[in-house]
Image 1: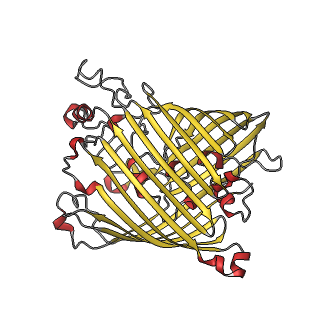
Image 2: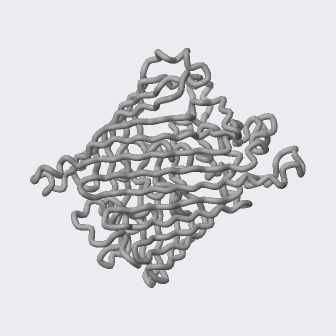
Image 3: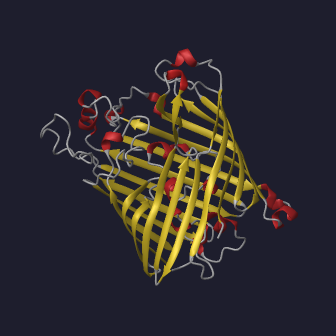
Length: 437
């Protein structure tokens, strides 16, 4: 199998010998087989320290005038800590695995409560998630044709295809795509992919989204998940991506998704509705374009996404809380017919002008970022919830003492429409990505 390097290894190289070194996909970066070594172990992780200069009250959007002068609040977090495992069985057969701990994982204990008559109680110690983000077996027939089966990344949008922390400047992942799309979007299915000339392509068939988990604040963000021990696949979805490596350091990408989202539930019915919604499909269609430039001491990244959900009136009726048990995982908030996200960031390495620092491969990027996104665009665009219409500005620094490590700092503000209050924050973080063997 062709040797794949990690994204940051490719970006750190001083000489780009082939056009594909502009940026590798997230799926490719799991594998790093070098010099005949069959086992690969690596990962990435982030630490984030933030101060938010706005209210975090649950009602800050319903009655914004009451929270205009609320005190700031702080958050310390480990957004992601990931372990990569890869193995080359030989004869074109390889395995890739990515285990992710979000917000340090989950925690619970059983305790004997002395002040409650020595009762045994299960205590929830902390929040978080542990996910198997990738687990697949790949068969390479040629450089141009591979078949991958298992749990795979759905590479729709820039953030999903390139979600590792050295692939964006801000401390947290870019907000627009991270709000409206599953992030990182991963699902079980089959992928056909390969490289030919300056192109890399991928076509996937995966378990479909579930419209019952769509909502106003995140559009389809939660639709790829499942609260069960399995993922319902009554509906299937198709995703595709093509990347064009125009020259060393410059890549353009086009990606999309199409699939139905209603009746992808467990059990496969809608309580109390009989045949009324049998023909409702909830078709989801997403289109995305993106690019990255890593040349002349500049890194520039940009993307634009637009999405559509059909049958939103029927979906919102089905999702109404009165139609479901109080403990149902269904999200009752309405969804919009469309969602949009546009973003661009650019950073310049000022250490490139200092010979000794350049020779030591240290980098210091001064960057700025602009993005606009809206997770709720209803039919007819008659909005009642304008707080989902967000313009975000950020600027800051990324210091790389080594190619695999970044120390980050940014000042960010969300600019919301009146009468909502703007949401500025100051963020400091450190991130790494690399392979240990």
